[in-house]
Length: 220
Image (tube, rainbow, N blue to C red):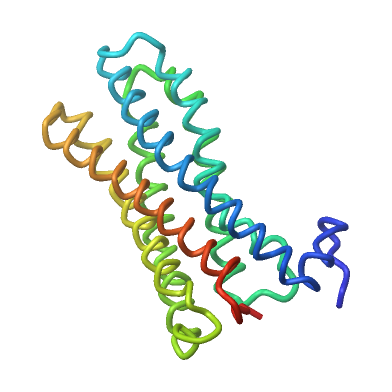
């Protein structure tokens, strides 16, 4: 197989699906913990913005960024398969990369006293996850014929990605409502977002477990 120019060991992962199965299962575990922790930390950060938490918002934003890396880690398989993966897998990884960069930018933005920058980043996050629905649906459509044979993790994977996308799309309305001082509605949406993150993590762990432990599973 062709050698990756990005990382020297990705050829090994591509040529040995068992390694990819282990990677999928481990990142599924990481996604669950990252989803739970990220949802909690994001909500505490928002409380900090409202003056209702002890630690500063930048501190919680930094911790939330670390949790977010674990949360999105199942998407890193697209990097391992960068030269052989389907277009929608590469698309997912590219969009995820933009999302990580946005999360990094959100840390210094918490020092900003006005809400303009936060609104801008929230729009970017919602737009990223709206666009991400394309590869989420494409993966389901392209592999639908194998959902009950060699790709039995397809349905939980699709539902997990859908929860991921919907949670991200909520970012703009949540931030906009907090800025408008509509705290009750914003808090309800923020809790919904945290629940979606947890659901996503649980489904990614389920998907990884099926891929790892169910006989006859191969994703090509």
